[in-house]
Every structure is written in C-alpha cells, then in structure tokens.
Length: 500
Image 1 (cartoon, rainbow, N blue to C red):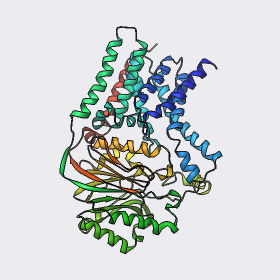
Image 2: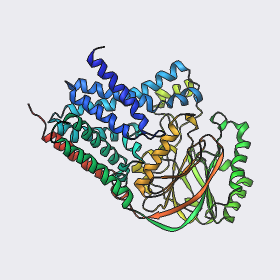
Image 3: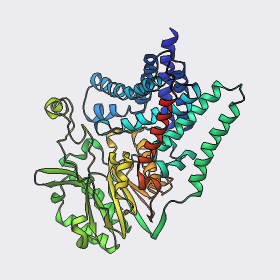
Image 4: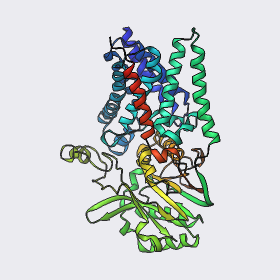
C-alpha cells in the first residue's frame, strides 16, 4: 500500500473510532485524540488537495460509523432492500464527509507557522464547518464534537458559548496535543502542557463553581411515560385501541403534577381523540392540580402539524396557549424537499407513511401548566440550541418528546439523550424527556442525568423536577459570541499567513 493510501486508511479508522467518544460509551478523550491525529495529518499534507482527502476520509469513517442507524430506518421500517439501504446510508455519510474535507482545504489555504495552524487555524476552521453542517439544508448538527463532552470538564463552557464553544475547546485541546507531540523534546512543550491543563481546569471550575441560573418555586412531581409501542404497529389502526389504553392506564396510575407522553403518543388528530378519554385524563390531572402533555397531530384548515397539547388544571384558563406545534421539521421524515423531483422516491421506493407536514410558528410561548412555564420541543428540534433558547428566559423547564423507535437497537437514542444534556447546560434549565422506546430521562440544569428508564421497556419514570429562572450567557447572546471568537481566530490566521 502506498504511503498516501495508508494515511487515508489511518484517517478513516481514526474517524470511525472517534464515535466511541460519544454516548453510549462516553469515552470522550477519544474525540480529542482523533482530532489531534487529523490535525497532524493535515500538517503533514503536501498540498491542499491532500489535506482535503484526509478530511474526507476522516469524515467518511466518522459519519459511516456514527449515523449508521439511518440504515435501520430505511431498511427495517422503510422496507428498502439491503442493496439500496446500505449504499444510501453510505452516500449520506459521504455527503456529510464533504464538510471535514472542506475544513481540510480551508486550513491548507491559510498556510502559516505550524503552531499557529495547530492552535488557531485548524480549530477555528473545524468549528466553523461544524456550524455550517448544522445550518445547510435545514441543518444536521448531530455528532458535533462538543456533544461528546456532556460529562467532561469541558462541559463548563456550554452555558457561555454553547455546544460549538465546547467543540472549540475540544479542537484547541487537539491542537495542543498535536503540538506537544511535535515539540515533545523542546522547551516549549511545557508551556503547551500548561495551556492544555489550564483549558480543562477552567472548564471544570466553571462547571462546578458557577451557577448561572437560580431555582424558582418549589420542586414538583413529574411522570414521563415510555409506551414502548413498536414502530411497525404505531400507525396501524388495528393497534390504536391498545395504544390509547396503554397511555390511559399509565396516566391514571400516577399522581404527578406534570405527566408527559412521547411524540405522537396518540397517533391520530387531536380532534379525533375520543371525548370520554380526553375528559377522563383532564379530570385526573385536575385532581393532581396539574396537567398532562400529549403528543398527537393537529389539523388546521388544510395544514397538518406534529403537535403537543395539554389537558388538565390549566386548560380552562389558557386554552389558546396549551399547544405546541413543531416548527423545525425533518427533511424526508416530515416533509419532502423538492417534491416534484423526489416525491416518487419517498412514496414509491420507501414504505414510510408520511405527507408534508406544516411548520409551527418560529416563536411560540411556553405553556403555563403545572405551575411552570414549560417550553416543549419535539424530537429532532433539540439538536438546535440556538432555537431552543428562543423560549428563554421565560421558560422555567424544558420538555422534549421523542420517538426514536425508527432506529431500533442502535446508538441513536443514546446520542440523542446526550444532545439533550447540552441543551440543559446551555439553558440552565432541567430537561424532561418522554420517549416512546427510550431514552426517557430527567436531566438536571447542570446537564447531569438524574434518572432514566432502560430502553425498549414499557414504564413510567417518576421523579421530582425544579423550575429555574435567570439567563446563562449563551441564552443572552446565542452563537454570536462563538462566531466573534472564530472570526478573530480566522482573521489572525489570514493576517499571519505565509504570503510566499
């Protein structure tokens, strides 16, 4: 094997191993090591073309390993044959890998001294491209490096700079590590080691010694229902009665002030919910001086929404505000982009029951229920931190309702729960997650998972939650601060570039 091909293989394997740094394994140092290897390969590249290839192969390994669960949705539930589902998954991974390839090209076009490239240019370019991935074509920020550090000392930067700020801390750590290897026998190595220790120590101090938000009011009881309804029968009319009975039973068997059901727990339109059932659930919630949140669909004129609505003690007073309609829809999951060109593929090749849903309003007020201001987000929406903070600082609690049953026994649900940990950190609010098959969890305002149910079981997670008030720095300035930092770093790289 030629040396260049061997290095491409190294990049691919390194990218694939990097995924082990995320949930469920949580080996977060691997993300720092993996990026350090990539940065070293970029430093050794003899041309921008070569650096681009290293970035592509790293990204291909990373995404092929990290989002392989898409194959489950296509093959197991979309009835796409293996010979189509496997290439389609790999093609999507290759498309995403174009972004690390772009990062490789961009850093190579800012040639400068090695230390400047490792400590400033490469980290800034990497995070800028992560942001780009989270924005293009409605965005896919899944597996941003910062998510792997939900439980690491670097999580302390999340309330200030968001997940991209944590990603930057990871990338700078990788640059320092690569520079340490490069200068390991020189005097400067001790300063690099000090810088690395300082970066992680400051993160730990922020994490354990700074409370950005304050508890508001008394703790309240919650019940998060995990129905474990198999995806293959979820939208089957013959299974509807059993599904409604499952949730009815779990609601009536608990006395929590706030009960939360998963996304589309009632797989029908809100106005099709049997009146006797809605009345029964509402009366039970009122006895607890609380409310129940129910995932379903809504129809308004000719528009259909993926929605959550509330029943209980608050409905008579705030009926107009007791619903949330999903506003960030999933391409090919909830709407079909370029329908005239691609509609035949979704509705013909795939057996996924869907039409085009409509988006809810961008700014929707938190629901005044159970004595709290509850900001709901549905499934994939909690991947977008800059959108979650729109409901803050008014919201006192965050709620995510999800159905990750589409992805079977893969790592998707664990990765998703880890994403919610970062949202709690950024917002300084508790996150309550009610999911169909898991992971249902209660996440503290500091991002720690307090309680959780095992995946793929039917059950109710009962516990206590606390409302919070105040704003983290990230709530106040969103991604503007991290962009100011990135532009400054890229500006330094541009000004100090080798102009020969």
